[in-house]
Amino acid sequence: MRRLVLCILALVLVIPSFAQAYDLLVLQSRRSPAYDEVLKGFSGSRTISKRVVVLSDYAEVDLIRITREDRPILILAMGDAALAAARKVRNIPVVALMSLDLHRLQAAQPNLTGIEMFVAPERYCNLLNRMKARRVGVVYNPGRSSWYLRQARQAAEKAGITLVLREVTTPRDTVAKLASLAGKVDALWMLPDTTAVTKETAEAYFHFSQQQAVPVLSFAAGYLGLGAAAVFEIDRTALGRQANAMVAALLDGDGLDDVPLRFPREVVLKTNDSILKRLGASLDD
Image (cartoon, rainbow, N blue to C red; front, side):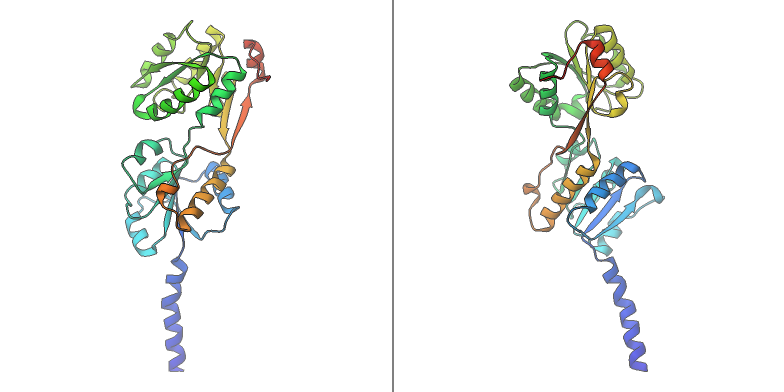
């Protein structure tokens, strides 16, 4: 009997450590249907053991302690708050999603990779070509989006498009910079730049569109109802599948150099047909 009791006690002590063993610590900024869609896609590909921690459920999360005790191999950070928390960990690779700060922060954190919230500029340039737009206005904050504009310029040049750029450093600059584009562009390209596009300034893009009779291309379906002619929206379920493939590659032994920052692989084009018709714009090839 004594031997049996000792065996049971030994199992009780050992089993929790096995219960905590997992490959991936998922840090989720908050509870949101958007994150649920990403995780649905992530779970639909290769099975990877994981623990999910929703930061908004706690007053404070000691991530250093969690990683020290649980010893996950990787961290998946979803959202800006999750990425900010994951930056405290330097000895574990971090794959980040759903954050506009990813590219800016990655330069200072070699253990960080992930998938951008920006759509590959070639997709927009192809769409602008279909709309026969040749001079395209872009308002942006260099501190946030200069890396993207470098790639956008290259894509635009190949597509025969001239980008007419206006820099802003605060949201209050946006309205004046848009006004300076009057008569100089035949389309606006709206970036997910949190300085150039805010709740307060978004309306100015569509006011410009009406006044100048030029289409606005944007990045979220919510802007279609405000006056955007077309948007590219990230397929969140596909984003989860793409993240799963990146995590699987790292778990299989690939280095971070082999799994660099990427643009979303699958996006959905959505259009506002009434706006396109009113502006005389066409997407016919």
